[in-house]
Length: 292
Image (cartoon, rainbow, N blue to C red; front, side, top):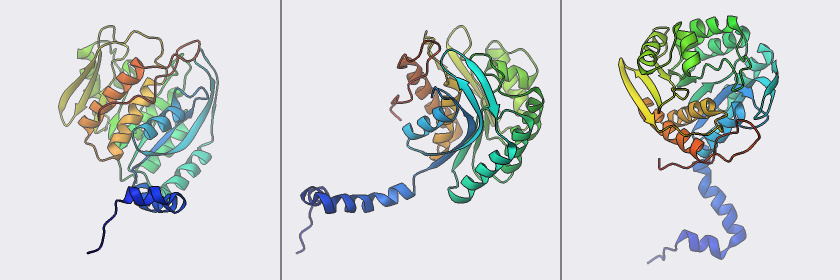
């Protein structure tokens, strides 16, 4: 009878050969890892934007690709400059990634201007995967990250291509054209934004005074996600991280309601365990671990 040996014993007994064999055994897993794409701006302090998205993708077991839309000069205290890239460069990045490493989901963050919103919307017409639109309009410190004309273009051109739109209270008010300040107005805004063409809308209540309640409008119904408010100033990049986690879970095949639930748990833990970096509004903990 042929003796069957434990593979770990084989690898341990032949370290050099074992390393190559281990690589081959893991190759299938590497080749089938879910891919998520982020189309967003850069935050050199690492708490938001492309940097936060890629960290979140990695932590949630997803390979991240990225298309850069704009550069910011910022830290945890202020945003002092924003430089928007040309729409041609954004389009070229997007086409290069899509042609070689097609994602299982994508998300957008800060897009900057009308031209870039239009470029992304045009490409999104052919997307065969979920698209999460985080309609970033201003930075954490109040710096505009989306021109006024581009806001109308986002509502008209990009939202109808979205699987999910994730506005905060201010952004929901802009898109729904109404004040949004409590649970009832959040629900109404979600329904109004969905009427613009989005498949689902998640209005985030992180700026409410009481518990952090988020409202998901999906398939004609409302789901509320509640978490206790964590009193800290270290909340930089929460919107980017939250939407990136949703995109990561969608890339893994999770349904939308479950993806939001997982992301809610992740962002809550990330805020709670923030590393306390910087002298202003510091980043959340992208290393946060949750059960799922």
